[in-house]
Image 1 (cartoon, rainbow, N blue to C red):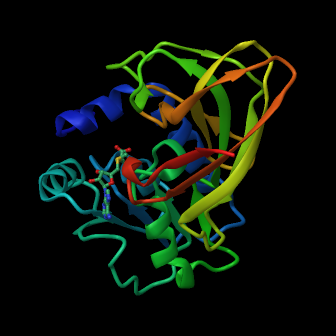
Image 2 (image 1 turned 30 degrees about the horizontal axis):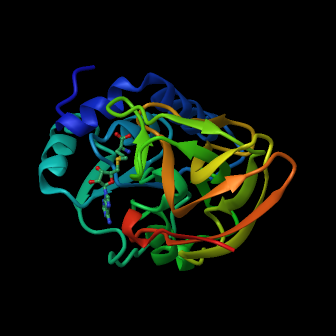
Length: 263
Ligand SMILES: C[S@@+](CC[C@H](N)C(=O)[O-])C[C@H]1O[C@@H](n2cnc3c(N)ncnc32)[C@H](O)[C@@H]1O
């Protein structure tokens, strides 16, 4: 199948690990005879590829995206699928009228800080019923103390390869299930157990995506690349010691909302 895309969505399509994980999760719901399949929503539909996957199984798919250029591509890509309706809207403001059987929402990024995944799920929260299926199911966030070379916040992705060493044990610091109402403000004290004598001047955040309760994915090149964040000041860390930090950010409000303090 040939799809029309923006440059960004083309890169998303090239990430076959990301795509096959979503395909597997949608197929898994689609082939389940015990769930309703009247209405599916694809929030942040991009090229429309996930709606196309769902169209085989669901009676109707409403695919929503904010970006007018992207919407034009999605309209073109889905024109031969009579059960897909393309809507140009902001999902954090949209009044959702019907109760969907499935919500697909892939506005994912590391720790959900940059994209509006959480704001979207909170907007649609009153339409989520016990039977509503959600893809992805949730995410798991991990954090590690590092000694980093450059004093700037960086993703570890196709374009940038920050240099750093991990100097302590990893901590799973947050688990989010999209069916729950989520407080977008994250603010927590985290304790690191240091395993190397080193300068401690940053942290690395890794986000794993739970497509469903059994299928975990990532990071992949276009799905939640690892994020390396410098501390406001560096510290001499010693093997065997425990160091506490306070980490806060607001999901959906961008990297500038991140604050880290040594305690
Ligand atoms: C990571 S892309 C996912 C694209 C698509 N699911 C795919 O697999 O190719 C996220 C998409 O969400 C859209 N988006 C971001 N914020 C949005 C919002 N508030 N309302 C609607 N769409 C949004 C972006 O324009 C982008 O196309």
